[in-house]
Length: 149
Image (tube, rainbow, N blue to C red; front, top):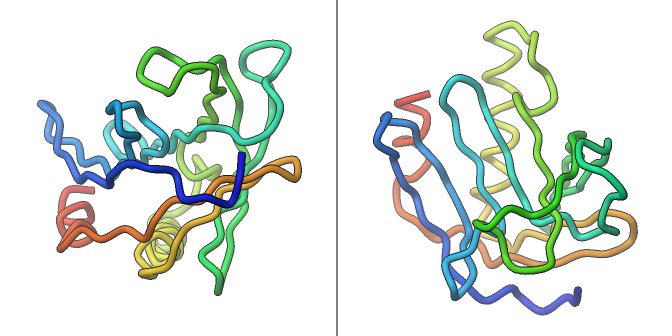
């Protein structure tokens, strides 16, 4: 993939179970990136690296905004129907820290949201390959998300 910005749009949604999701969807409505919470925190993204030989292969991605970056360890899977064709899905539950105490969890969640809410384009990279999403330009998504979770 290139450094061109992936065409699409950011959306903040609350599903039927009152779970909030911040997502980036391509022009056909396919999921490129999504973070949400329900039973636990969940992050899904198109994996920019090589397709895994089998599902549930350990992998990591880096999300950078030009000022800061964070690494996320998770797993890759064949891209589901909800993803763009011929892509691999990266999934990470609980921001990689399922047993974190609440105060430490909030600090980590705030770091992730600061990264996403920086007003800068987001570069998602793995294995030397990357793609760029435009800045999140949605009013009040963060307080609405954090009010629920």
